Length: 630
Ligand code: ADP
Image (cartoon, rainbow, N blue to C red; front, side, top):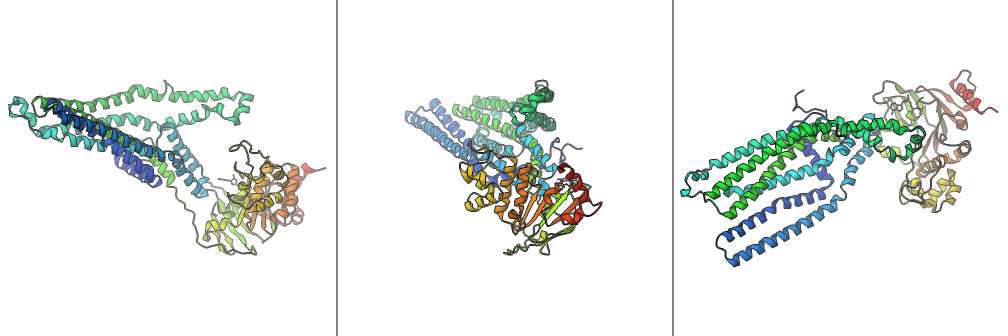
C-alpha cells in the first residue's frame, strides 16, 4: 500500500490533504461545542504571539539612543515607555489567561460529553454492538495512552496560529534587514545590499522547512505506526497495573493468589513501556536521532541569518539597535518556523486517531423515525400485535425470533415462558422498539409502530428489565425518574410494590440516597428490595403496558411469593406481560405463551397447556415441579 494514501488503519501515515480535512472537521466540532473557550484561547494566543515584538522594537530604540544622540529626555521617555508597555502587556496577558482558564475548567466535562451524548443518542442497535464498544475502547486507550485524537486538536491549532503570527511579526520587523543599503565604502561587503541575498536566505529557509519536518515527522511516525502496540500495552496496564485498586477483585485475589498470575501480564506491559521496551528502543535509536537532526537543521537557518546581520552591521548598513532587533526577531522567527513544522507534523500524526473518533461520532441513526403521534386514550385501548415477526441480531446468522404472531388482549395478563435463550427478552426488545424486526411487522392499533414518534411510542410501556439499574440518587428520584415529583404518588407506588414498610424505616424517607456513592448516609438495598423499587418506578410511569422481565430472578422464595400475590394489584387495569422461566410464577396469568428456539410453540391458559400430553409446557412444568415436590 502506498504510504500517502488515506487508509482506515491507524498505523499508516495519512496524506497531508486528508489530515488537514480531519483536523478542520475536528476544529469545527470544538468551535461548536466550546465557542467561548476557543475564542478566549485565540485572543490569548494572538496577544502572546505578537506582543513580545513591542519589547524588541522599543529596546532597539533605547540601544540606538544610547549608542547615538544620548538625549536624556528621549532616553527617559523610551525607557519609561518600554517598562510601561511591558507591564501593560503582561497584565493584559494575565487577564486573558484567567479568562481562558475559566472556560478551561469545563473542558474535560464537555469533552467527555461529546462521547456520552453520542452514546446516549445513538440507536440502541448500534449501542449494543460489540464493534461500537471496541471502537470506543480504542479511542479511550488513545486518549489515555498519549493524549491522541480529538483532545489534541485545540492545542495543535492554537500553537499553529500562534507560530504563524509570530512568523509574520518576525518578518515585519526583519524586512528592513534586507532593504537597508550598505554604504559604498564597505568594499566587498557592499554586495550584501543586493536583494538576491533576501532570495538566498528565503531559499535556505524553504529548504530547511522541507527537510526539518521530514525528519521530525519521521520521529513522530514511530509512535503513530506502533499505536496498536502502545494501545495493547496500555490496556494491560490499565487493568493489571491497578489490580490492587479494584475492590471487586479483592476477595478472589486473596483466595487464589491471582496477583501471581496477573503479574505475568503486568510484565507484558513492562515489555512495551519499560526501558527494554519497543518505545525505549526507538527513543534511543531512530526517534532520538531524527529529533536531534530536525532541530540541528533548523538551527542552520538561524546561523545563516546571524552571519548576515552581523556582516551587514559591520559594513555599516544599520546601527546597534537594529542588530538587537534583527537578532531577537530572527530568533523568534526561526522558533516559529520550528513550531509550525513540528505542529503540522503532529497534526498529521494525530489524523489517524481523529479518523477513529470521527468514525465513532459519525455512526448514523439509521432507525426510521415516524412522525405519527400516539393517540392519548383514557380507556387505555392500545392494541399491540406481532404479525409474522422474525428477527436476527445484526451480524448473527441465527434467528432469535421466528414467525412470531401475537396479539395482546387489552387489560389481560400474558406470561411469556421458555428456557434460557428461547427469545423471551428479544421479544420484549422488539416490542419496545429497541430493535426493528428483520421480517414481519409490529402494529399499534393497526399501524406499523415504526410510523409513530419514537418517544410517544415508548411512553406507552413501563418495563422492569431483567438487568435493570437503580441510580445512587434519592429514592424518590429513582422512582419518579425526575427531580421534582409527586411525593404521595411515589409513596403509593412503593407501597404497591411492597416497599412500604422499608420506606417508613428510612431516615429521610423518599429523600434517602440509595447506596453510599454520593451520600455517606445512603442506604444499601438487597436484590429483592431493588426489584421492588424498580417495579415502583414502572408503576409511577403509569403506562398502559407493564412488562416485567424475569422479575423474580433476584428474589428469595418469600419475596417471590409476595410479588405473585401482589401482581394483580400491581398490574391494575394495565395490559401486563410477565416473562419468566419459572413456570410456577406464571400460573396466575390469563394466558401463557411458550417460546422455544425463537418461536411461539404453544399458547393458552395454564390448565389448558398442562393438559396437552407431550407438550413443551407440560414437559417444562414437570421438570420444574420435581424441585418443589413435597
Ligand atoms: P431469553 O430471554 O429467552 O433467555 P434471549 O432473547 O436473551 O433469550 O436470547 C435469544 C437468542 O438471541 C439467544 O440465542 C441469544 O444468544 C441471542 N442473543 C441475545 N442477545 C443477543 C445480542 N445482543 N446479539 C446477538 N445475539 C443475541
